[in-house]
Image 1 (cartoon, rainbow, N blue to C red):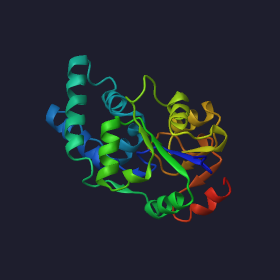
Image 2: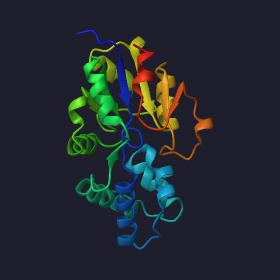
Image 3: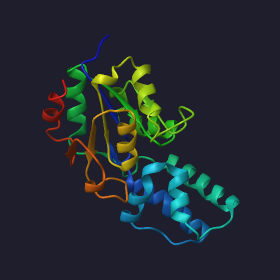
Length: 220
C-alpha cells in the first residue's frame, strides 16, 4: 500500500509528557545513593538523549566511579520501568489527531532514544500503541538519533516514501535527525532540551496537537 504521508514522532516531550515520571525515577536514584535531587526544569533539560546520557549529564563531575554510575543508571531504569505511566500523559489533542490521521491512511511510527521495550510498554499502557506501525528505540538498531538512519530505516521498514515523510520532535536531537535525513521538521514547544525554540531550526512550531490536522493537511 502506498501511503499519503508518513509521520515520524519522537516520544518523550513530543507524544507524551513523561517528565514527571522521569523526575520521580531520577530523584529515587539520587535519594538512594545520597545525592541531590533535581527539579522539573532540570529533568526536562536532561531527558532528551536516553537514560544513560540523562544520568551522565546529571552526574557531571560529581560522581567519578564508573561502577557507581552504572549501578545508578540500572536503578533508574528498574524503577522507571515499574512506574512508567504513573503521571505520564499524552499531549493535549494527541489522541484525536491520531484518530484523524489513521482515517486519512497516514502511516505513523515512533523514533525515540528511549529503550524500545520501555517505549512500547508506555505506548501500550496509555493505549496509543495501536496507532503506530513501528517503534524504534535507542537499542532497536546499531545507531540512533541524531543518526538519520534511525529515521530512514523505519520509513523503509514500513514501506513509506522519504519524499512524503515528516519528523515531529521537541529537541535539537530530533531536528538534527530530520536535517540529516533531509526531512521537514515540526518542533513541539517547551521540549526536553536545554535549547530555546529559536535555537532549533524548524519548519513549523506547535504547542500541542489541538488543531494539528490543519498543519498536516498541507503535506497531503
